[in-house]
Image (cartoon, rainbow, N blue to C red; front, side):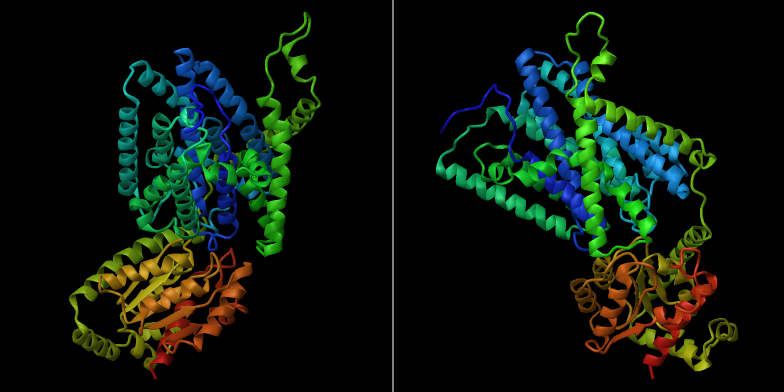
Length: 626
């Protein structure tokens, strides 16, 4: 069977490759969220890796020495992680103070909570949604995961020491950990709120199951007790399992939607278990993946993955500010190049300077400070850090940095609209469930006779147009633009159920429509207002049209200063001739010369614009019923 590596610490080949996959997934998700829908799974991959490696090292230390040097462990973790985090925080704060003062709000709380590793807790109530590409313009949003890891590093060594000292059978410890992990995943499902996923997505208690998967694995799959060679049959089975878990992980990267309710009701747990299997196989020195994932490119990215992860969002956010949200492919490649360049500097002059510095046996008269600053890298790092410290003081001295970002008029309106939409949805859904096809037809006919003159004036409709649409049963699905407009649609057509959410992407729509269809309440008229936050995509479009079947679809095209808007609008126009039940409502053409219809962000309609938006839909619906 080959040599056994028991009792020896070894470098686990392939793990840097996994880190590279994780950080690539996260970066691509942030730049092209509709291309790599589940790229955020890179974070659970980091979590499981951390849980496994830390626990594995702690167990090995206890087995060697009969104890765990907690102070030494904390010192090593701080040297490895804290300097790079602090420099990134101060560098970003300096940039905010100089070039982006609209981001000053909450800056004191953001910096302090990150330095205490409790940012994720703060973000559950005050942070931007991880999936909101318009509202989530903070360069700090991604740091929530580092806080969970920091909390884990602080508490877990103590628990491991107690468990090992009690000499509990390690398989039992692993089972107990998996039970707790399962409870954490169940708690995620309980805490999930589709209107505000921050609590479920950022919470330590709801996300710790990923870390616990790694810790459970370490108790039953120690890296220093694996055989260096295996029999052909065992190796073949191991490799098949490894390749299968890698394929399933990649499928998750492309498929698993972070805004699906099913993701929080078990799918994230399942894919995290798959990731744990991938890590288990890769950690084995005889596995194919251990060698396949060990190459120069992946190792380079993996060793620098921490700094790459730290600087990705700050670079992306500032690029968007300076280039006015130019998200072309070339610009996104340039963003990645800048991130890699900064990460290399951080790795060389921050991470390595502190990680490799050890207290030396100094000659008499030579201070520790003098020894530290003897290196060129330390001097460069100290100079840059001093500049960033001054810049941070300038930023946090601003009054805005101690205050939460005030709600804009648009945000106030969206919040008010959400409550109004919810109340009207309940009435519309009850009506849809209670009525059969004949009753719906009678109700529509009756509604056509009762035309409110005030509505004709407000929306600029003729009596005939309003009569044709006022009794319609409608399902309206969309993003924040729909949140903005839905109350006007429900005023025109009271039997409208509006399902809208800030930050929603097109890939969420098929599942939403399928949910309504499955409950038998998907209306004969479907309004779709999606595409503001990303490209629609041909596959998603086909899924939507297949779900609605022969129902009438009124798809409103978009208007915003994002590169994909023109692509979306051209695509929708090209599809109109392919589907006789598809009607394109040309909002772009209607609003392009009416800036007075838009709010300050030049995307969402203002109150008058919402009326015009609803009127365009109403006219299109009336015209289609000739």
